[in-house]
Amino acid sequence: MEIRLRGHHLLCLLGFRGMGYSVEFSANMRVVYNELRDKPKTLITIIGGPDDLCACFPKNAEQHCENRSVYEHDKRILDKLHFVSGMTLPWEDVIHRVRASMQPEDINTLCYTCEWRSYGVCEAGVRTINQGDWMPPL
Ligand code: SF4
Image 1 (cartoon, rainbow, N blue to C red):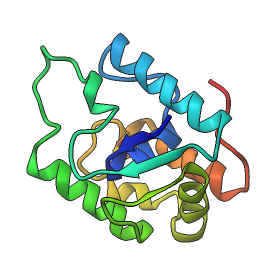
Image 2 (cartoon, protein in one colour; image 1 turned 30 degrees about the vertical axis):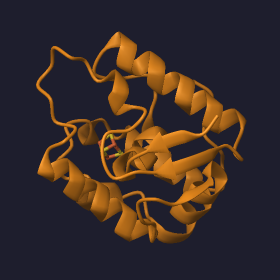
Image 3 (cartoon, rainbow, N blue to C red; image 1 turned 60 degrees about the vertical axis):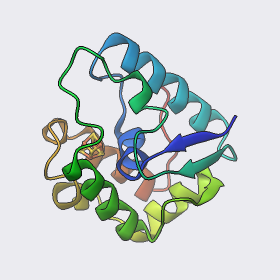
C-alpha cells in the first residue's frame, strides 16, 4: 500500500489522536496512521495538492484543500524537512527527518494558520518523536 501525502499532513499524522473534521475523515486518518505506525517501511509519496487524507474531507464543509494558503503551508513544512513534492520514501525516513530537523515548538510557526494547533497534540507528537519514541497506539 503506497500512501500519497501532502506536506503538512506529514506532521498532522504525528499529532493525530483521533480528532478530525468528520467521523469519516477521522476513520480514514486512523487507517493511514495505523498503517504507518505498524509498518514504518510503508512507502509514501509526497504530492503537491489534495492527497489520501483530503479524499475524505467532508463534502458539505467549506472546502480549503486547494487554497493557496494550504499550498504555502505544505511548502513551509517540506522546506523545513528538506523534502520536495514527487519524492517517494519509506515513512520511517519522515520520522528520522523530523527528529533531525524539527523542534516541537516549530509547529507554532510552521502551522500558524491551523485551527487544530492550539490543542497542543501536534507539538506533543513532534516531542514524542524527538525523544526517540515511536507513534503511540490510538
Ligand atoms: S497544527 Fe494543524 S497543520 Fe500543523 S500538524 Fe497540527 S493539525 Fe497538522
